[in-house]
Length: 142
Image (cartoon, rainbow, N blue to C red; front, side, top):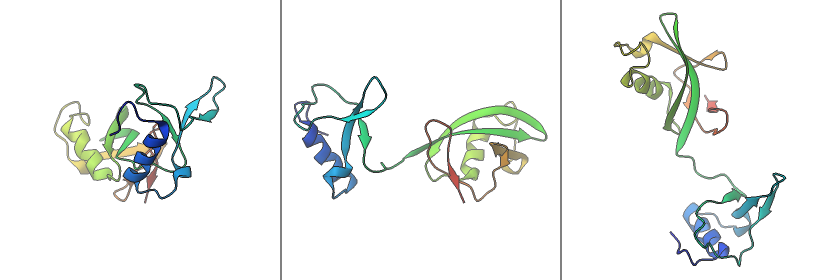
C-alpha cells in the first residue's frame, strides 16, 4: 500500500517489489486515450486519490478465473452459466460449485458424474484446468 501523496514512480516501484519484478520498464502504468491507445502516465504525477490504473509490461498474477460454460444433466441443459473459481481449479471444483448452488438439476440433488460440462461445444473432461480471460470466459489447459 502506498500513500495517496505518492508519485506514479513510487507506485511502480511498489508494484515491482510486490511482483518480484527486477525491471522497472516491465511495470508501466498507463491511461487509455479517447482513441483507445495507451499512454504512459508520467512518473512525476501524484496519485491524488486515483486507485485504478492500466498496467502494461508483464503478466499479473491471476487469482480467479471467470468461466462461461453450459451444463447438461441427463440430457437437459441448464443453459449458459458463469462461475468464478480460483485460477488453477479443475472440472471437479466447478461441478462441486454447481451442485452446491443447486444449478445442475433445479435444486435437486445431483452427483458430479451426472454432469456434462461444455464450453464452445467441447465437453470438458477431468483433466481441464481453468485459467483467466475476463472478456470471453476462460482459457483452459490440459
